[in-house]
Image 1: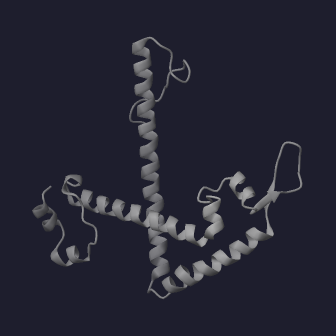
Image 2: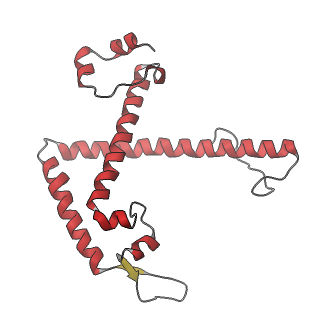
Image 3: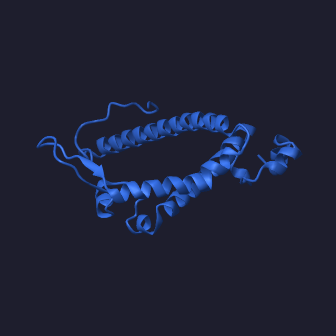
Length: 182
């Protein structure tokens, strides 16, 4: 699709609203243009979201790399502690006073910087609800795609192993998942 056909897809008033410039080699139809612009916006939104939450977690959050919430990281940061054992085979954790204080601070900052300002936008809650449903649907497509691709890679590895006569890299069982299934 060339730039002239992209211009035909978007009327001039819509083009002026569109912030994203899409490389021409990524689209061949109006639908692909919409998907590509959405994906570029999603990447930017995800990165902005993680930066925002990283800053809200403060210096300690960055120091303990709390963007991935593992139990060990949370314990090192003093945000959780082991609770009294319920059984010999289970370990329970509970939030510390520090975690409860940080959570209160976090919620106050989020309200100040996002929740309260966005509440001023007309129909914002309904828009968020619609967006949340759409994002969940889209996440389902991406999850399904990841499963299909993993299955295809597994099948290709199995085929390569059987042609070489060597056992499968992980074990000698063969995958029963056909290409293209999810």
